[in-house]
Every structure is written in structure tokens, then in C-alpha cells.
Image (cartoon, rainbow, N blue to C red; front, side, top):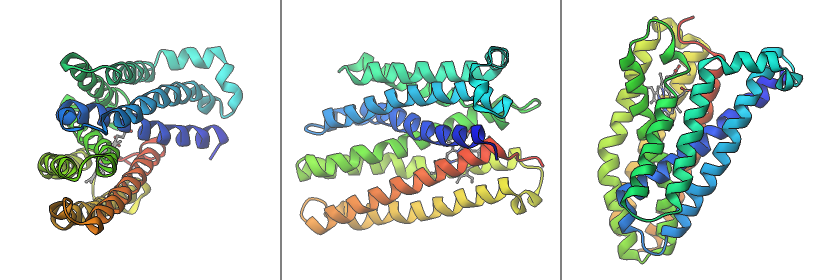
Length: 286
Ligand code: HEM
């Protein structure tokens, strides 16, 4: 692997974490913003910082594409290669990601219905940006596949984006409020998270050519996603059935809940990194 490839994939993985953190917090604030009392400002700050970091990382990843083409970091200042990147779908995808992040950064600094809607639009724009590049955008693919990918990503954003708010709320809010927030979140997550898996399955079987792919890097990384998803479901169930019902009156339940949330966060980061490697270097069709 060349140095520009290595730097580019690291920047891309970090940009995924920032994008989904920012988009997720925008969704959570729009859906449950009214429930957060003492924790609202802290959560908005995390979303804002993620959006700003995302803007920097998306721009850096875009600039590095010419270096990947050249096989050397000097490619960043090769204007001929940069103009080739500018003419590719990558520039529209990067522009959409940057506008989505800018909308979210703006929205999270303001209260009210309109900013909440702008935040949701920002998250939507980011999820659609993924459909302009990558395997679902390959020639001959149906537009439906893009729609399925966008939905897959909106659920990822909601789930991943809710973890920091839940952790902050469990530390800062009165117990009763925190328990109510967790209950509301888990009501939506119980429906949304199985959809994430089903949408992932549909994407997999639409993209791959046959079972042989599961002996190759692309398929093995899909299996890593599925395995990590199973662990995540275990943690989510532990939270829902064991800790959440006792949050109001048990310190042990609160710290168990917080540990499980941190573990879920790290596992989703692992899936995001695996997905970045999978879609940067490997193909579903050979
Ligand atoms: C927490 C769990 C998951 C996360 C965080 C996640 C994240 C993502 C992300 C960020 C992408 C977009 C990649 C890109 O376009 O560059 C993606 C695409 C995809 N995901 Fe997931 N995913 C999860 C679960 C799953 C599961 C369980 C499956 C399979 C059953 C799956 C299958 C796929 C497939 C096939 C794609 C399209 C990849 C491509 O374009 O080649 N995902 N996922």
C-alpha cells in the first residue's frame, strides 16, 4: 500500500466518525431535543465540534485523492490531477458532505423548529452524498440501491449519534429525566436497528455476485460487520432489559449503562473503520 492510500483511508475513517456523530446529534436533537434539560448545551457542543472536524477531514480527504492517483503526496499540488478529481463525482459528493456539515453546525448553534429541520436536512444531504460515489453508484446499479444505502446510513447516524447524548444525559440529567430519555431512544431504536441489519443484507446481496465473495476481503469485512453487529445487539439488549428499567434507583445500573454505551460506541467505530477499508480497497464483484 502506498503512503497516500494509507493517509487517505485513515482520514476517511475519521471523517466517517465525524460525519455520523454530527448527523446523529442533529437527528437526536430534532427528535428528542425537548427532553434534554441540563445536557442540551453539552450535546450540541459535541455535535458542533464534530461538524467542524468533519468539514476539515472531508476537505483533506478530497485533496488527497490526487495524491492517490499520483502515488505520491506531491500529487496534492498537481493541478492537472486536481482538475480530474474536480470533474469526477467525488467533487459533488464532497460538496454535499461539506454543505450537510455546515448546515448541522449552523443548526446546532440555534434553538427552535427551523434549525431542527435544517439539522435533519443536513443529515439527509450527508446520507445521499454517499450514493454519488462507491459501489452502489457503479454503472448499471438501480437507483433503489442508493435509496437503500441512504436509509442504512440514516439509521447508522441515529444509533451512533445517540450514544454520546445518552452518556452525557445519564451523567448530567436528574435520574427520572435520564430514564425517560433512554426509554424514548430505545423505543425508536428497537424498530430502527433491525432495519439497519435488513438494509445491510439487501445491499450485500444486491452488490455481490455469489457466495465466493465471502472467502475474499470484501466478503470477510462484511462478516466482520455482521459479527460486530451481533455483539452490538447483545449490548443494546443488556441496556434495554437489564440497566434501563433500574436507572432511577440504582447506581450500579447507571454505571453498567454507561460502560455498555462506551462499548457500543467503540464497536460502531470498529464497524465504520472496517467499512472504510472495505469500500476504499475492495470490490464486491471480484
Ligand atoms: C453498526 C453497524 C453498521 C454500520 C456502522 C455500517 C456503516 C456503513 C457505512 C458508513 C456505509 C457506507 C460506506 C460507503 O459508501 O463508503 C455502509 C455501507 C454498506 N453496509 Fe453497512 N453498516 C453497519 C451494518 C451493516 C451490516 C450488518 C451489513 C450486512 C448485513 C452491512 C452492509 C453494508 C453494505 C453491503 C454496504 C455497501 C458497501 C459498498 O458500497 O460496497 N452494514 N455501511
